[in-house]
Length: 262
Image (cartoon, rainbow, N blue to C red):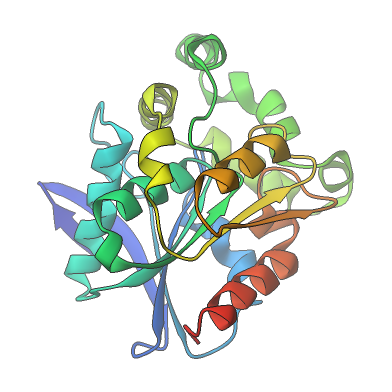
């Protein structure tokens, strides 16, 4: 079970695939651990190196208290340092997309390309985040289960997928303090101006039925980054790596191929 120590905290990660291949690091969404990427990896080609990790307060990584998005990006940089990786493709989902933007802004020379999935330069408002955090403080993670699943997945997936229950379990078993801490970091983050400065190949990808970061927000994000590609996939909510992994994999492969990274 690979673990690194950073500033006295344990960060749980997985390092798979070809050790000499192109490194791709994945930063996942609020309320999930790095297993959310499992369905996607099966659709990506051999010869790549896949690094996944649990951000602070999620999965098996230590809780770190109140921290801005930039501090989570520093964790990502520390993980790459730990693995001896100088440059990587960064794939971020939801808050992972904010972390990816923060990382790319601070480390342009270490960022080969960005895949920003179902995210934005600014996600939500205090009027959205504060009641959600209050509900969790009062009733635990189960208090936000139903509305979260409605944002995460299409009605068809919720009704028909035998795997739906495990994603419900993943959310409700997330550390409430970790979720709320990251929720406050999302609430307070605005990367609009920093994201305008990003100058690496970028794909902005979104599910057509995303109830958390809808297509209009992701399209706006793409408009901030020169040359960014915007792609929307049908029959998909907030987590395309789970609901439409083949489509997301094809888009990632296209970005890497078009920019001679593979």
